Length: 441
View 1 (tube, rainbow, N blue to C red):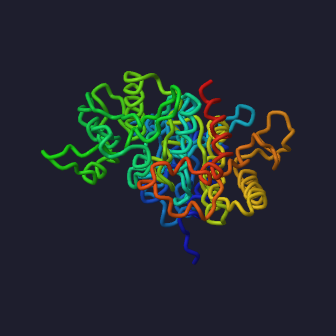
View 2: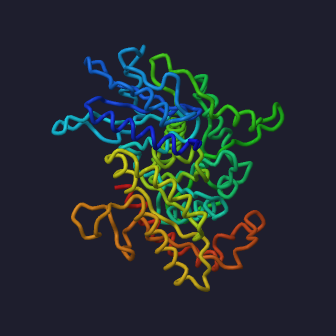
């Protein structure tokens, strides 16, 4: 007897659920935290349930079948919690011509749910810098982009969202000049309604461009208070991701909502102390972490996706893009328009050949997942030719040379003005800067 594993159980159950919807029933297939599968049928209009469906699901799902594997919506205490959940992913809608019902899936997960919850109205002027794998120079690129935008006369706010491994704050500000509080302070204080009066932002003393440009920092943590008590960063970090009860007015207090509240508070403080930020750069955590998901799907209108040209990185992005490919059309179409690849650490000695290879691999990754199955010149199709400079797959390059190894950020305050650093980031800063300016419109 063949053992049914996690992926096969899901595929089998999806097929049964979809077939059931063809009879006219609206169906929702739920996968819970352990991977168990339950089929919920909307019988609130008096529809008949097909005979033998429980046995069919039980066989299809194997050990991942729930007990019972089929539930009627009319028997649920709050059927709307399933039938109209904001986390529903509709695989196909009702079709009056064929008489088929709606088929949707609902994931009950601990982590990663926000990858499938893109906002259709993300805040403008916010840009996420993200890498599927770490070690690609994302934080340094964030610093350089903030500096370049400030040199254009813009007011820039940089938020360090890499809470487990903060980095850009150390580049942008001396410890003694940091704000008294950081992002983790707002997240833990707001959990008990105590966030008023937090000192969240400080103007960078490291980047002081000529003209009226300026850079502000929302660090992951604030400065040491100096004497009375010790800051306990790990204790706060351990509570950042805790589920909170709804507010008194019934509004949810999700991590995404709390991050948005913290960023908005930081933006207001910059506006009060100087002027409204023109651009907000979010230095995101790498990998499939919840904060990365929220930064890309909910908090920003443009995401710069950093990558090295290797099979591991493309496999990771392909996995991520494939999740977005399965979203309802409106959400999928929106999120894919907000992406742009960054070719990180491209050896300068062979940059043209390396960039061409990166471009080919990026275009293939998008073509297999997020691009429409159509020719690039098809009207209305989301598809781009390999050499289209406006395409999401067309890379913004950051060059690499041996001179960049061991750059002393602390001991050499002018490291970012060295000729070899400027040469490495020149094209990235010009093209990413132009995109950032476009986001203000």
